[in-house]
Image (cartoon, rainbow, N blue to C red; front, side):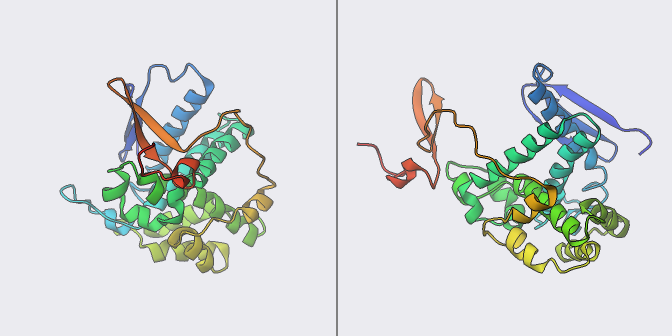
Length: 279
């Protein structure tokens, strides 16, 4: 692009939409009041800017030419959105706008969100991508129990894939090289298929990634963080307890009535009969 424009709408809504040489963002007027909120806005701006390369020009084959009259289904939203989300936070840090601790905190939040979503054992990253029209954008009270966010799991997968490539190449290559190679090969009008993106990643890594793909992207088994932690010299630490317990119930205020809006699987309330009326 010759000129790139950020159209930042002051609103209590949130989110953004990418275009080829601009983006529309929505942000609260209080966004700069706290450091955390400001970093969140920077990551949103980074996410939409990265879409100039990933999605607007390098995209899954199903997303172009785009059919605006019908649902467009693809198995690759975990890559289109999740990988973009991974780089969004990473690029804010590389630009010197966040500290290492702040970056790791953002990454940890994504891992925690995924690992506390029961649907991770039910829906794969590919299926979450394919079912976006009937699941992600039409959530109900049971959604966390049977589905995941392809944004969140995609970003976590990108972190693990980055580590896998760095480990396999002795630090000589990374996910950056995969994105450059994919862009050079498939950023034209045709786009890429899921198999073609995997092939590019394997060529950069110099080894087969079939097992990783089957487990992390196509499957629903628990993700293995050990290699990534070792590669980057990191470790998980116990969360600081708030001193409060959680039954596993989410509620909402319905005109003065407290209504149970969600009961999460793998919680105390679900174990004692989440679908029954309390006696």
